[in-house]
Image 1 (cartoon, rainbow, N blue to C red):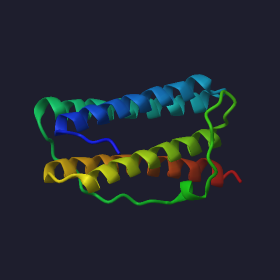
Image 2 (cartoon, rainbow, N blue to C red):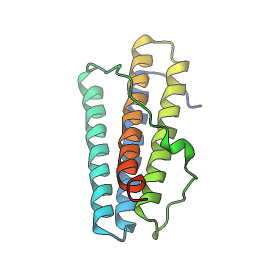
Image 3 (cartoon, rainbow, N blue to C red):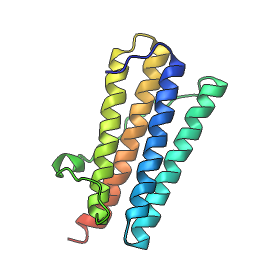
Length: 151
């Protein structure tokens, strides 16, 4: 587990993770065969860009009010098999991959929060974990709407 010396290192790490998510969703968009899937992944990339911008603002201007809201978990990703990114992925596979990625990010930030001793750092990490949980929920809802209802 990565160790951080201060809150700026955590923010730099989180900003990098958000950029990785942007790159990931843009790659999926570029590989998508359908216009609908491509648009969806561009939308996801734009959302991640907004999160990166928010984290950058926190770093530049100091702490903002962080949410401690609990996020519902539909647990859909718990029952899906792992999917590897590919140019021939369909929308269902892409959503599965996105859910798994967000779940991994949630677990990482939660584990870091559990190790944090400074209350403000712990709160920041918990807030980042909840943000990833919201992302996962969004993908689960999309999966439920688009995949389960079609079958």
